[in-house]
Length: 221
Image 1: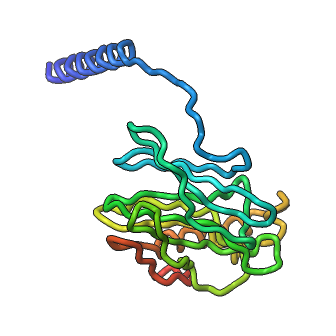
Image 2 (image 1 turned 135 degrees about the vertical axis):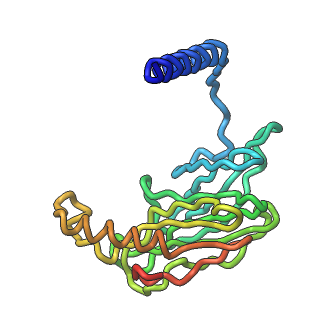
Image 3 (image 1 turned 90 degrees about the vertical axis):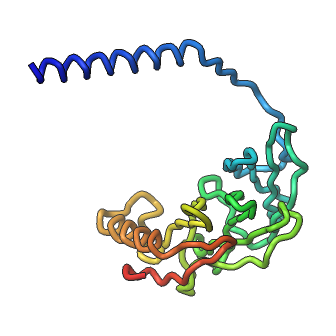
């Protein structure tokens, strides 16, 4: 009897939720409409992030060898005027590994981009900067990694830490073999890369502004 009762309650609960989901889906009015981008015609490498204030769009504009990271914020009033985060002639600019700008819960803006560290194709570092005045001014840039090698450091993802602070995950390419970039990598190379990424996930945290702990790729950080 109890089994039949439990089965009946479960079926009734599922039916109720399916009905509610169907009602929500039927009454939800979703409209997709194009928006004019605040970025210039020479822009590329877009990235979106979301905060309680709205949506942030960041992008890179190129003028010859000079690359400039800009952003604008979308609120109910529309797009803000684009602002400059940083620029340089020694950046690593790639369609797959793009910069970003993120607004933290306390209002601080954090930004990251990639800067060449040597002559090798994949010798570049993650650079970080923060702003406490909505992007009018930015701190001197710094790196979250301190291994000092001219290897790949990229594919960074910034996120709000629980409570307060900036979280950051990035790819540490010191263990990557050269053939991994041309599709000839083996399982060992992929395994080395996975373990290094896992170590870097453990090694980064933040405070109410931006604080990054030293990271040397070890597992006991």
